[in-house]
Length: 153
Image (tube, rainbow, N blue to C red; front, side, top):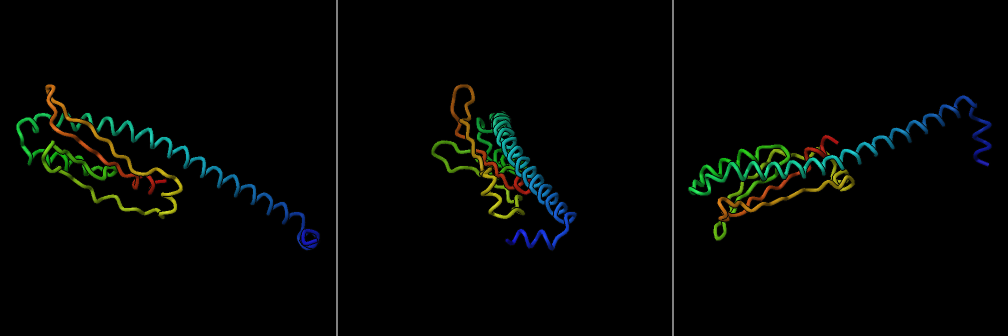
C-alpha cells in the first residue's frame, strides 16, 4: 500500500537513482569493512614479526651492558627503544631486582573507543629471557600498542 503510493508519486528515474545510490552505498560500506579486516590481519602478522626482531636486537644491544652492570646505559637503550610509535613500554628485569622500565607516552588515541573494540587489534606483550654465555641475565619485555594503527585505519 505504501509502496503503491510511493510508486505513483515518484518517477521511475528517481526510483532508479535511489536504487543505484543504495547499491553504491552498500558496495562502499562492504569495501571499507573488508579492507579494515584485511589490514587488521596484516597488522597482527607484522606485529609478531616486529616483536621477534625487536627482542633479538634488544638482546644484542643489552648483552654487554648487563654483563658489566651498566644500568644507566641499559636505561638509555630502553628509552631509545620506547620512542617508537607502536611501542608502549620496554622493560628489563634481573631476578631479585626491580625492573628498569621505559614508557612511551606518544600514542594518543584519535579513534573512537567503539572502533578499537570493533577491530579488536588489542595490545601485544612479548618477553624473552636474556641469556649470555649460558647465564641468564633477566627478562626483556616489550609491550606494543595498537593505537597508531587504529588511528590509521
